[in-house]
Length: 66
Image 1 (cartoon, rainbow, N blue to C red):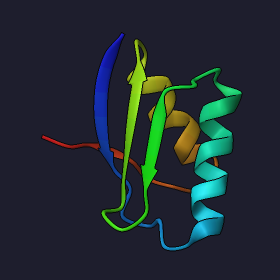
Image 2 (image 1 turned 120 degrees about the vertical axis):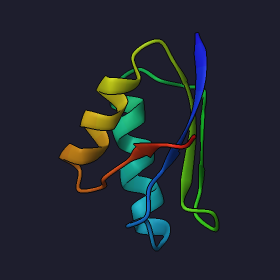
Image 3 (image 1 turned 30 degrees about the vertical axis):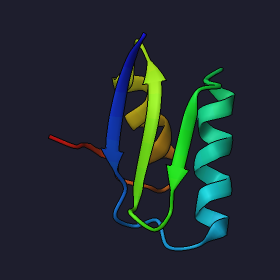
Image 4 (image 1 turned 180 degrees about the horizontal axis):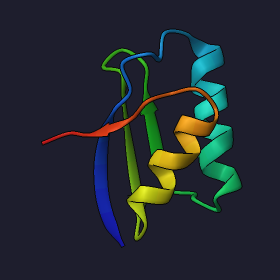
């Protein structure tokens, strides 16, 4: 599995953290960290595109950090 860092600029509160965490858990991902202060999500997955789509579906645009 690869580790990725995603920018999630629209994340602003604990409700956002819960929605993002729920979306990741629904994908079966257990290794992730949602960092509200830095507006980023660290995730371990083999399919980052599915993660980005899942976050988009719950209302959060995510982009890979470079």
